Image 1 (cartoon, one colour):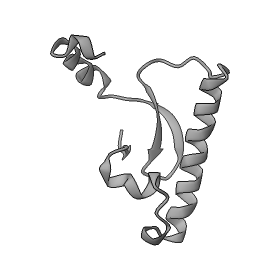
Image 2 (cartoon, one colour):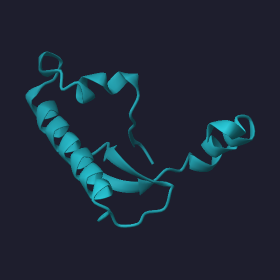
Image 3 (cartoon, one colour):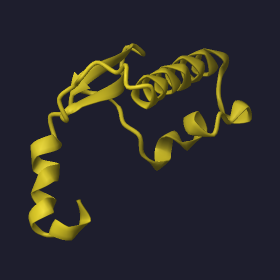
Image 4 (cartoon, one colour):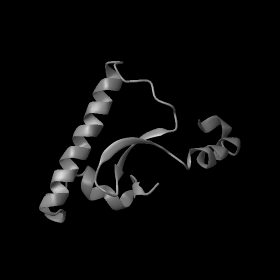
Length: 87
């Protein structure tokens, strides 16, 4: 599944860097940050629908924001064997 992933390259989104973003990008940033805020509020108030650990909130290539399965989760979790005290 292709989509936007939170890395250093999306710093302009997280910092809401208006000078670095186009008008359409600003609309996407507002929607993305609103979705993150809503998910955080639901979690803090324990109204969050129970989700599998492999589900992540994603900003898709088509600019839709939706929950999706992280297909790389299992591979990423293999590091637990290398760093067992870290997780």
